[in-house]
Image (cartoon, rainbow, N blue to C red; front, side, top):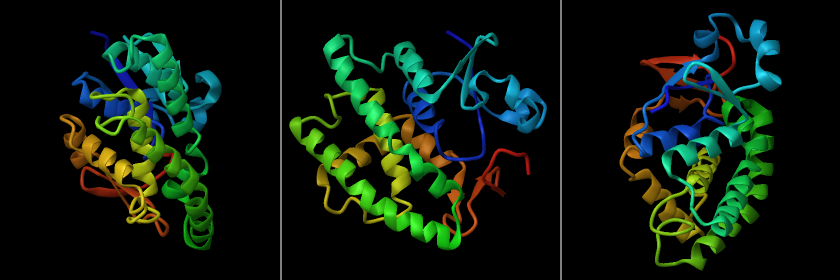
Length: 228
């Protein structure tokens, strides 16, 4: 088995789907803040990192895989969370890419926006999200007798959708009231072995819209890319 080190920041964003997959498959890995891994402030090492951004997956202390989609696909192959059939794989990847399109401005809004800016972005986001939630509901209804988008077991696309919808619930806890299949899907993913433990123990995100912080080892710390 590979030695896996996932490098990111203090935020609930692009490292979530990979971690959900790793926990679900009971795959060993470490999660490290950028300043812990590089032993320098992010601002001082950013220019030396491939594509100047994180997350980054370090494999066997040698290979650096950047870009969250590339990380997710690599892990899907490693953990068996992708279909063997190439046609189904194309459909799975399309759904995953669709979930990735929700990143902007959802993740930055939840993790960083405050005050009037948050309220303004929140209203816009709630409108923007409705067509996407309708798409997910419709896709789930294509296979009404199975719990996940493509069958009895989840693929990497399921974890991509779960993360973004889970994050969107910070905007409105009743967001899924009109989407029973999507709501059921979210509950099913939450109950998966490994996933439920991860969700219960990951740093809590508090103060959304006012003073976003992650509670790390019992200590609230500002979200961001610096060690403070």
